[in-house]
Image (cartoon, rainbow, N blue to C red; front, top):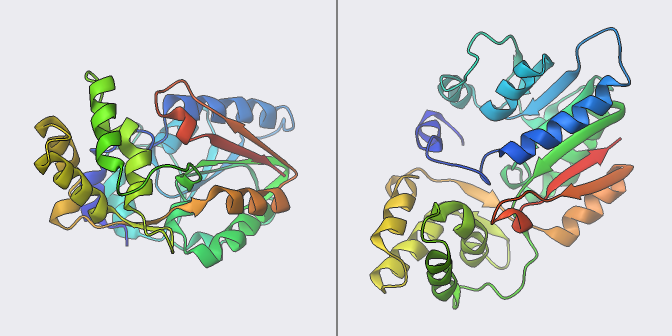
Length: 270
């Protein structure tokens, strides 16, 4: 359950675990197309989760915003970090799969939402989002999807070492995020306990594969002191089967960052 404790540590996260500038540019591009189809109102945007980057972007774009989050405590805590604290929004506290909107929104946004839904509920969620959009509306998201071969718990130390050597002046977290996730997830269920990722980093440090700089960066997330999160790393082939079966048009967009190839932005049109 996301709560105020998670919000405290969330301030240490950066993209790809939050929307990047590239992600927001994709949103702006989609919004321009939405505006071409309306003339008498502001665009209506549905935001799944209390993602501040999306909420501030939507205010700058002068959108009519609805936020859906099942955690009142997380929403209250993370909203303190908003740039535009006076922005008007409609906030609904419920699970995303329980939403009952019908052709109301021009754009739906949800960063990493796939990993925060029970595997059995993914298809239902996509159908619910599709139903929420007007004809021609778009759903934009990205997540951690299992698809790249060759990353295992046996070779992850070497991979982390090579990343740190190759990118000595970078924040290690974004570039290490994907291989660390794949190495730490349960191979049978594709579920990820974030505490397992910290344990890999800690063991890599103890064995001399990564520096104290990397260990210190990962301590900022609180995984080792109780800031526990579980996440579903959906197989990418399964994801594509679901989205291609629900949405009329699906496109992917890859950003300019070192880690972008592992985190394409999916734009789905009704």
